[in-house]
Image (cartoon, rainbow, N blue to C red; front, side, top):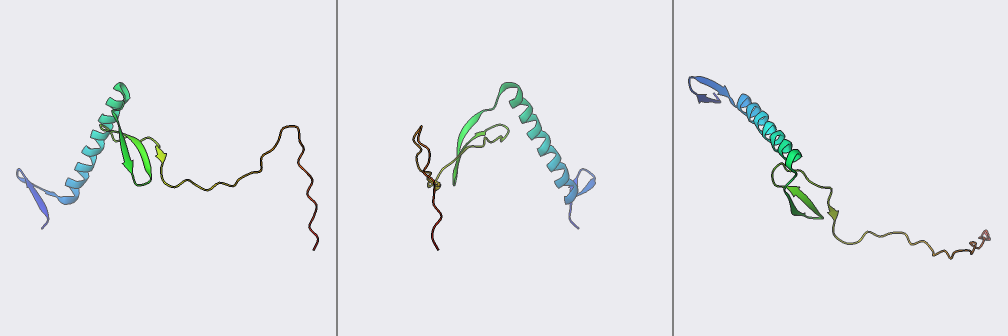
Length: 93
């Protein structure tokens, strides 16, 4: 029988886990309320492909910045002001 003895009552693991989950959620909410009043305690955090700011108190995370090799972008030909682009002729088949 999976049960924890607390006083003279038996508490199943499911009840204890549900209670712990609710208490954890309430603590996170309390931390977020405090951060909402006095501001976040932001610390620089590093992940594999990202640098971000994370609050030490409530766990809030900024969107951060991607790091790693630069993404390839399509290069557009430069346009000169006042010069119309030359018309393109259809290719002969």
